[in-house]
Amino acid sequence: MDKEIKGFIHSTENFGTVDGPGVRFVIFMQGCSMRCQFCHNPDTWSFKTNKMRTVCAEEILKEAERFRSYWGYDGGITVSGGEPLLQLDFLLDLFAKAKACGIHTALDTCGQPFTCQEPFFSKLNQLLAITDLILYDIKEINNIRHKSLTGLSNENILEFAKYLSEIKQPMWIRHVLVPTVTDFDEDLLALNTFIKTLKNVQKVEVLPYHTMGEFKWKELGLKYPLEGVKPPTQEQVGNACNLLQVNDY
Image (cartoon, rainbow, N blue to C red; front, side):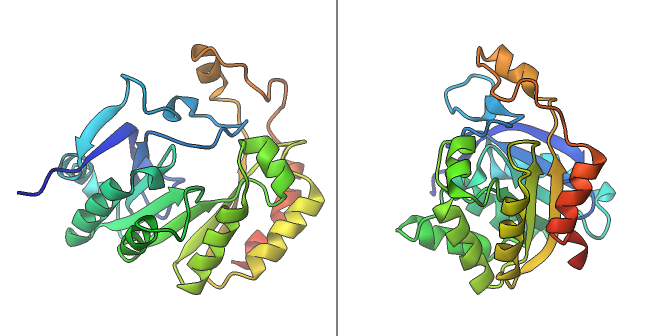
């Protein structure tokens, strides 16, 4: 008998409307290697917490199915994080069972774990074959600023975006707009140039930075690195949307 695959989950949202098309059941996975300065869920970073849930695919799908009547034609499940690709085996099991039930599957990822090394690469391709949509979070196109913002390079993240383009995996690009951090015109123009090289982008979204997660940093005893940084104005968001040509998609 095969061993049951368990996943480590931070939380779920029953009526998500900003994490893919339609109304969605959103599963926030535990664990992330990046340390984004604007992260509103720093409590998802570590696997060493007694607040996370340990579940199997059948259990979480049963929970999701309770809300299926609200999803409409476009809805489904979205797995977010943390970083879902750190729990690849669980994702494979979950999405395979979801597809068997005719459920639309979306993966919200920053792509940071991407590598062509095995066994990750083969398992990733199995997952992509049963994933309907990738929500791809590009934090910063400038690698120096990306390292400062997240603690890690963006080189493999951009390589993963290129690979998703090669295999024609449907993808939405998302960019969190943080004043004085990720809103430099030259970077937004560079990001737009990069996106235009991809052949699979269906939508580009600008996500305005907010401070709603600041209290979590303090609860964890962490200094909030963007203290004093205010959310972008409508004009700043509009400028980013223009430079990223979001209306072209």
